[in-house]
Image (cartoon, rainbow, N blue to C red):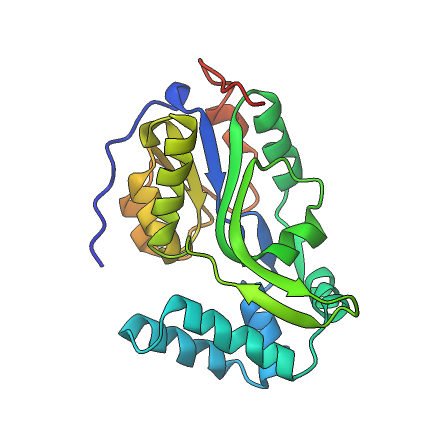
Length: 238
């Protein structure tokens, strides 16, 4: 895939800061994400992640079909809300300063947004008091007993992440040139290329370095506060 970077804009023009989640706001000791962890527990093998990713990349399955395969497998194996939360709390954590940085950005007058291929229950568990105005993620529904009863695949992962930024831009009348996006992996490339201020946090692939304006090493998310002291024209949010 060829990605052409958007013309970069000065940080003082930014009014919206959007974040990926897995690997950017939430981390695992060995770099795994919630899908890999739950497939390992309920799918029986880590190979399933590689096989399905390759099927998606080749066009054999759509993104929504990939989500269906994963979550339906967890459902068949008896995954419940409590058991999924147990995995999240045991295996995942917010990256250093994620809570403080995102909350402070909102206080300074930025709209903060999440655009991620994660599961909504990850943020609900680790960051229930989050400051995000919009959250674009995959979603799982549970019945009264806690069993999985349904799910909705996000339209805003992979190349769709850029479309989420366009949607927020239209809703707020803020140009994409005034949006910063913070991501870490190749599924963030389209959003990074579109955003006026693209930022990589602990990048997992060298391709990100070709499209970003700033690279933040692991553990240094707080540098965002140096980049964004406050927008010149804060959004008026109802």
